[in-house]
Image (cartoon, rainbow, N blue to C red; front, side, top):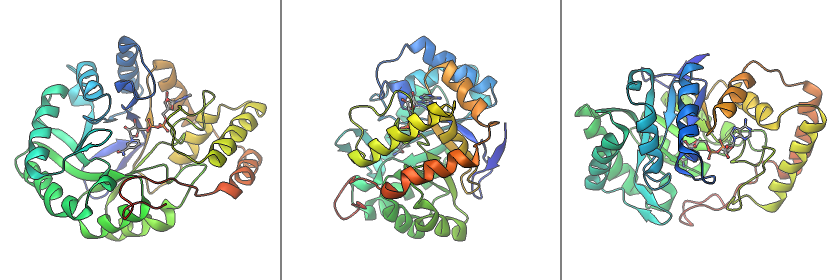
Length: 311
Ligand code: NAD
């Protein structure tokens, strides 16, 4: 396993990170013991980065991850989030952020978090993130409960503005750098580079679009993007390649990202995704994928308050 430093932090993250949102049944009900085996298989394969949130399964993901990491906490870099607690339940006030961390520490069975991320900031006033949430996160850092801080969200221009103005260590972006979309390179990467902030790139399979199973029913991408994704899946199948592996391999090659976070729930998926790291993408296959993507390149969707959304 290769490890990369997250910005200027002391965290060295495995290039493939374990996204724990499906552990909270966000992509359908899972077998909890299989989920636990997936966490152990990830650790054994050298994956050290685990990302969860109180929002995933409304605390279920944190509880399951905490159970799976019991006695193994020292082998993991544990990241959780604050501020989002339901589909429309957000609270980024300083008091709630502090309480949230205490609750997460209990569920995760640990006395410190390696990374705390303000979760889905586009749903609130960005000034509250900069003036209330992040200073509270910094206080938690000074108190030793949190090692480093970040924020996450979908709209890439909002991420850029907050990265420019806020005092954080890293940014978590999703669905803005993968086979289907690449505007992170021009919209966000320059400010991260200039400020020395770390990048966590999430959702390489575009939240299921680039998998044999296809996207979940709630997937917000425009139909044209879903159709192009289905074409890519079928092209990979014809070429004898697993589309998820191709998609993951593509993202891991992006050197700006310290880690690529993939949602994983079975030990088989962990093995497949780890073996993707050593696979090659045939240039002909990549060229055909680029042709399919061209008409829908960089298609995104609305998320959050109108003034924060890209669309
Ligand atoms: P993803 O693109 O990683 O897709 C996850 C889906 O892909 C799941 O259904 C999973 O079962 C499936 N999958 C994974 N490997 C596979 C394989 N080899 N073959 C077939 N299917 C496979 O989307 P995601 O889980 O939403 O994103 C990854 C992680 O990034 C999340 O779990 C979360 O930790 C983080 N994330 C954070 C935010 C945020 O902070 N706002 C947003 C999105 C993702």
